[in-house]
Image (cartoon, rainbow, N blue to C red):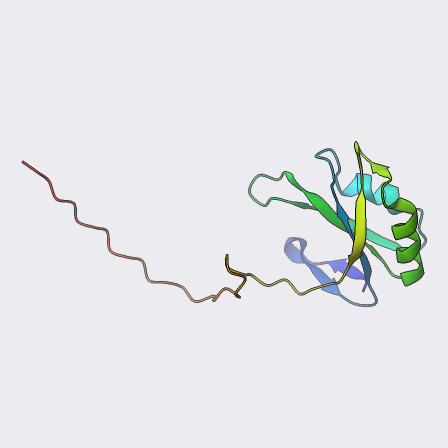
Length: 126
């Protein structure tokens, strides 16, 4: 599926998208570095390195998408184990999944707001 950037860095699915998971990325790897590494494949669409929202630091993985499954297979075969930045990249096929928020147990988070708790009264000792 071809992805189009929408507001707030989200992506909309429009057409066929064949995606690779890119693991073991070094801290120096950003979207541009990984894009340059895969741009020689004709149907390369985009690359995205996943970052921590709070710190902005890379989480060490990302995704590369292609509009043609033949290019995905070629990239997987040719690029797996090649150096991108300071480390050899680890690739595997990935499927697009709608983003949902999950709690620590893997259950979908509910989006209702909780009422704030009243502050506890402290007891002063004399």
